[in-house]
Image 1 (cartoon, helix red, strand yellow):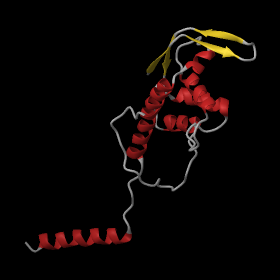
Image 2 (cartoon, one colour; image 1 turned 180 degrees about the horizontal axis):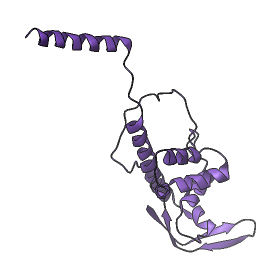
Image 3 (cartoon, rainbow, N blue to C red; image 1 turned 135 degrees about the vertical axis):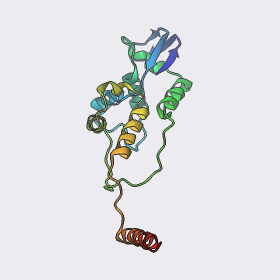
Image 4 (cartoon, helix red, strand yellow; image 1 turned 30 degrees about the horizontal axis):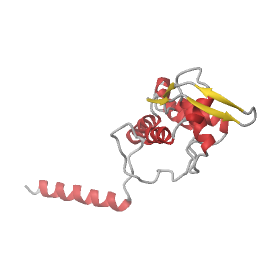
Length: 178
């Protein structure tokens, strides 16, 4: 969870030709599967796509991350570059000490990651629904750990199998000569 303080500000509304007052507020943000689901429902695209989010999409994702209720929508326009930087650093933080060596997936398929796919993985591995509110990187790490621990062991090639049999037979011969 991340807390961002927004200072009181006045914004100019060029359409109404007047100043709008925005009160000070403390935003409580959570980068979670719930937040991603809300954002994808509005934008109809994967949050995890390789394309950079526009500033409008970024501010809307911050809105989706907001846990506290009844926040004036103008507050998001008052976020400083420093605050947005802190939010992006929070999103990028792995929130775990677990790491994986990068290797190709067993099936070699590229999937477009969406919130529904993450929910599928959660339910497939018996991860409780309460985890949808975890920091997203921690949840993805748990899903990856479940995958790594439950995937079938890699089968040995014919050459590896033959070498194993030769070693076992040699050990048996040596043992029987004693």
